[in-house]
Length: 146
Image (cartoon, rainbow, N blue to C red; front, side, top):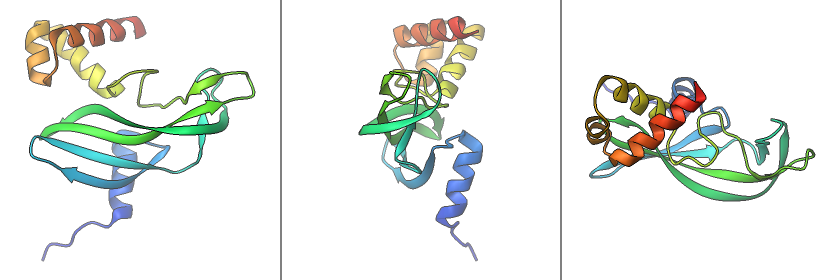
């Protein structure tokens, strides 16, 4: 007899596997050509991009970013806060799994960068389902971080 996993178990799995510390699993959409993982915020405060302290969240914006594929293309939806901090910073919050204004997770960027080390940009881009210019941009960002 198959027993479906509980929502708490799925949330714990996503947090441990993917490093979404600020978020909990909300639900999972399995569409024809893509998979969407929706995350819910655990806190109404956000982490400052400049100093790393928690700041006051002024408003929230729904983000949809690309992640590593789970059988088919995978996207993550979550609310990202606009933060006002004591250090004077006012802007988007810092998230451990995402670059400042990136539309891709750091894990996806790393994967594209590794592929470009062993094959051409166009081959890596076709495997990931992105434009070759995007693959080049992600590879250049990865090189700057190293």
